[in-house]
Figure 1: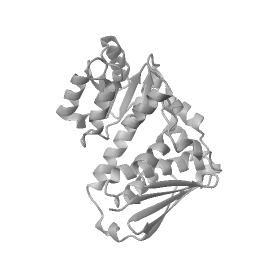
Figure 2 (figure 1 turned 180 degrees about the horizontal axis):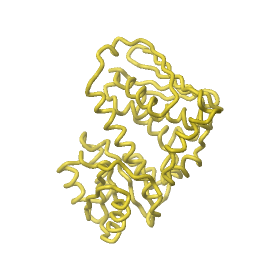
Figure 3 (figure 1 turned 135 degrees about the vertical axis):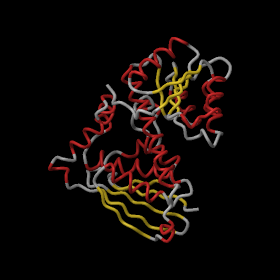
Length: 302
């Protein structure tokens, strides 16, 4: 069973089948979410326009009469207020072309009907976590550190997830859109901890997220003698109007090539999209080196 979400997490559920809405609402309220429902795209769009900021994610049925899910998604992406709200696309069509179309329109999370409860909770938890991280960075960025504008180079060393989030948030304050850059940097730094230093593979993380034990396992491994002293090193350097951020872990590396572009075959997993999302949304460039235990990302300062 997936772990309980933040008690204030609110979801908008959109489906033209009342029975599907009832099942979704039952599973998600039992897991601790607050839910609102819409029976078609027009109702959903009206709810989003009334106050989309109150939602942490939207579960959106792809195939609906009238205003369908893809059109709602496109309207959301065109709205500055709604474009960064995570969408979990519900579809009976799991083809690669269908997933690719949704990804290009802005949906990175998917559920195939009929879905399993644990899969539902794992996917929703991943989407909500992304949104919560973005909101956290936005709050931090509202209090800028003016002295950072004078930064030319810096180095950081850390070992925990909390430290990774703080370092990513600090560096991202230099970006015009810090929340996007912070999410990308956080992905690279968390990846360096979990996959690099702690040796958690893709399948390991997938199973842990389905069971809701991912954070518990990370914390447990970091207490073990073989992992306790391992660090992630981050080097930051200004290059004109670009900032270069190099993240290096002490692990054996991984097969990074297959994660640079989002594979539709992984669309229904709760993990495996972070690097491709970071590459597409957060950075000017993203380059892994050697065995994959070093990556350089660049973003514009203006």
